[in-house]
Image (cartoon, rainbow, N blue to C red; front, top):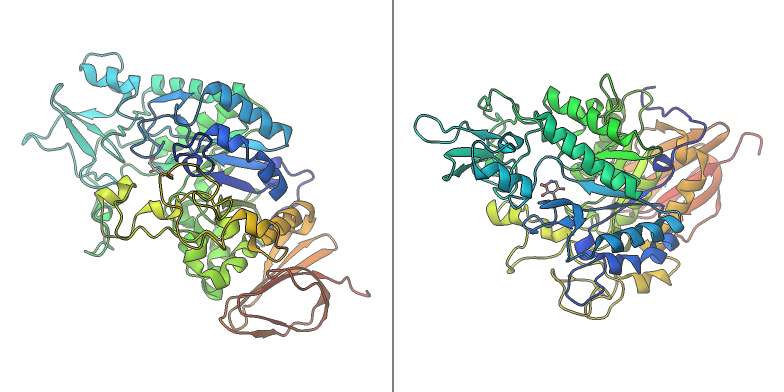
Length: 537
Ligand code: NOJ
């Protein structure tokens, strides 16, 4: 079966361990300015170790004007003062490594900030040696932009530069000009950026907007999107055939991977939006690309048993033979899982994340059930919402500060947090849930530990079963070890009739560990992982 995961002798660290994404602006403030920083993060390393985290993905901390909250970089080899300094970065890295926690840095090769020295030079004159480091083009004869390409953040993707009489291309904000990846000097400069951090000891990268590095050199118009209607955000009007997943992009990803492979034991994650169908090509072509092209299925699917079961199969079938799957349950770009599936099913979501085959990625705050931040009546911070308003795109909702306790400021800051802390603070905070052996946080901790230590979860095959009345079921098998997972997505109790006996290893409610002989009940929103008894036992 193509969805079976081949057993490997010694899985690499990025297969063995869950990855915990930290949005640094919102994790821990140390100086009272209401913005998270590296010194603050360093004080939470013990928490990460307690939770059982062995790999962190850190969203950008480079120098940035912060128009896209760090994804607009003005210096790739320095830390923004709002976060601290390079010295503090080195200290943090050392502290993490001391606790056996790896660090994966987010890098943004597709675009820089318009305040990056490269762009300042490039826009200074048509004859500047760095002119061709960005994507410049003459206007159409009528003076309009070169073609119909649209920015994901609204309007034309072309910005007029009156001083030099040309347009430059930006896939995102006009303040985020795209680098010209066809230019070998750009690729060499970026390879040096990667080496700069690899030599400092980082354990890998998450490559931002990885599918859109290269643009069609002919600058052909994008075709209309046949699915487009007025209810969809205007940037979706055309299909991005000529800027997305171009063959040259794949070659450039291979080059980046080769740079990372100069250093042992590192990992490359890649942001791949646009559905699971195209995931396969991001693993490898003739040469390796990503170890882990990110998979957003669990955030993009409907949460019913058939949609999940079907989506999981489709995704696993799209993962090439021998490649390793990966699952994301939250991110700084998507709504919070607790709000997406509802509080009554949030434990099921956690259990699914850690029992599917492949590397689980969780987003800081999801382990305490942080809900979406309600921004109604407030001025949005997110530039996406500001420029494409009214389509529910505001990403502020998932970026609220981490809640460490129930005090004002949530233990995140002594000052005024840059985004409100949000609702449900009394319930959803680390201090409260840490001492409660039945809390969601305790469930996460248990699942993290279980997945790390159980060979069937870590590297066993995935064997789907027929869903029964909204109960999603599958097995994970490794040699004689067999686990049976059942997740009740229905809003009411369900009887699971299966000729299976064994012992409950963990239940979503952390209150059952009984032996089961043929059949059992699941409460609404309850799931279990059962160690199936070997025959004759
Ligand atoms: C993807 C990042 O995840 C998102 O936050 C950002 O706005 C865009 N890339 C543009 O850099």
